[in-house]
Image 1: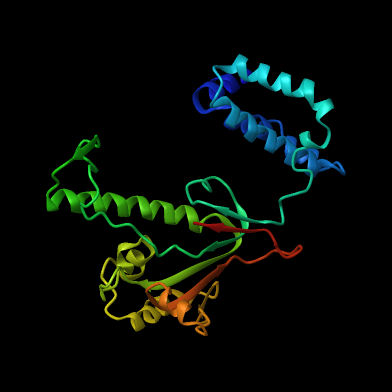
Image 2: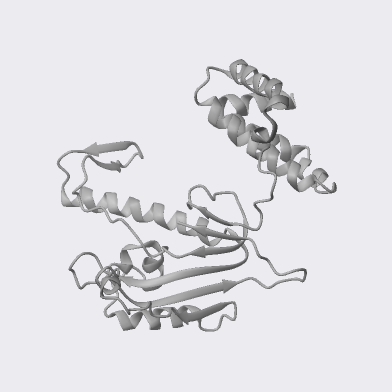
Length: 273
């Protein structure tokens, strides 16, 4: 019955989710890490799973994928070094991952440099997508102001869910880049349109860029796990650099750290975008 469940996962979600569940159920990573070459073997196994997932998109059915794997295994002895998969560990490398892709994963250290960015719905991109009162997906080619506002509210709700995902990926510490962003030639703040800005200001617009420090100071007050640091100004030695600088002001770095319980300092890092 257990392997029938694996087959059902393979058919409904793909070979990669199935293999990951199988590895988890049989505690294979923990078993491999007791071997001297366990990390290398596990890295290669995970890479092989990813390659099978990619190949499955071009093949018709499970049997075709099994034959594909068998053919490559038959040739592996002749290909030499070209068939060796990721012999070196990727654990110490900086990983750049989208927030969507990071769901369900954990990283020792996480950086969120663009967490204040947002794409508000203004009705310029058609068709406009939204949901009716019964939760059914709808589109409109001539949206009204009410529909545009509804679609933007749905966008903000999804951004809030993604913010929660991003903030809960770190095992030890998380850094957030916080800035008062402007759009185009407008002088009004767009920070409150982002998920983080919405939470910081309760949905109200930031009056002035200098007020961002007050928002962040109120957030960090009484919490020793949050550290607030201003971001150093970029070098402005070249006029070209000044001309291409993005429109931001009052930039801060917000660091939230979890208490450590001993062991070696974490080194693996992940940037979520």
